[in-house]
Image (cartoon, rainbow over all chains, first blue to last red; front, side, top):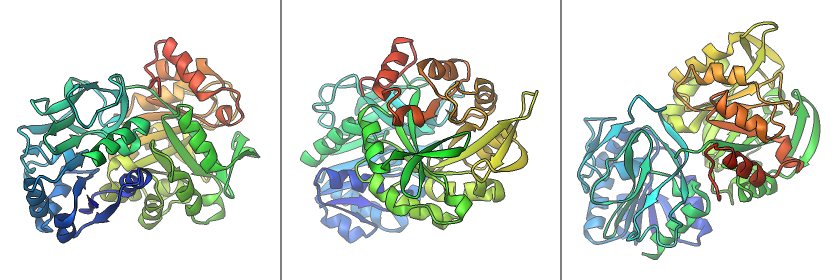
Length: 196
Length: 255
């Protein structure tokens, strides 16, 4: 069972709908005990980085951290990916999980923000998540803050400079864009995650 | 490169897609779920479903239609019409919408924008502005209730206020051009797009590829929306995107 973690931030129906379409067993849950039993964990998130503070208070953060320690595949989407970094300029008082080094930052004033729409990404051939995805693919973004490019970056996007569109290390995955809203490309990626 | 979005709009009345000219004279154009899927397959970057009778007849948005349409749609899906409260919005999100669009209710209760944005994020809140040109000027007035009621508000100022209150996008419809096929109102689109930092979706008047190119280049639109030219098969969406791509407009292609 894939646990789709609900911490009160936004709408998780679309994520569930995509996994349902792929025939993957999944459940939207805010119960740390369910997360501890899950075979895979997905942390979606739209909205404010500060909303991830609810993960700590609810005990979900500890459950997710333990699950990651156990080697269970984890996918963070949008703010869920940003949370895997150390923190974000959006909410300095709220710390991320710190799995990946770096802080998320605002887009430069030279470009319109939020970054909304379909943008092209440069994909690293070694990526498990992007296996079978065409290198010239477009995916759907909607966000005002972005994660830096570093050694875990497997897909880059350029909008007012390069940022991490996707990160990957072992069984840990994160995507800044919305695979559940990125047409066939996104479904392929979620199906790759299901197969991990 | 960030592409310009082509959005297919389904105006729904009584569970069927309809299309009118200048907001009246409605004709049947098909089943919402089938049309949404067909548009997605042929390359639409996004689907907008507007329940055009909802506010007028004071009934709830057709949640069943939304649910049925959302089920097999894996591109962004916006629903508008009849959303007056946070609870209305919550029901539409639960039925599978990614964004909601509000117009009449936002003007009556501007704080509604903020309340929905705080709960679901600004990216989920589209404020629809129906604008009509004030004769002989470069000013536009915002209308509500499906274009039936003038508000006395300047459309550009209202769009700026909507952004300040937490809107994530502006869906800007020219009432003068709606359903006419003579081209978008590029002056209106540019006036709004240059006044806000959030994306502006141009709507009303699409008749051919040249109109889209014009509203992206001259109107500074981030996205353009059309309905009738796609429904009746005048212009296949895929052909439109290919043509725009050839003209140097960044498009998601192949889709």
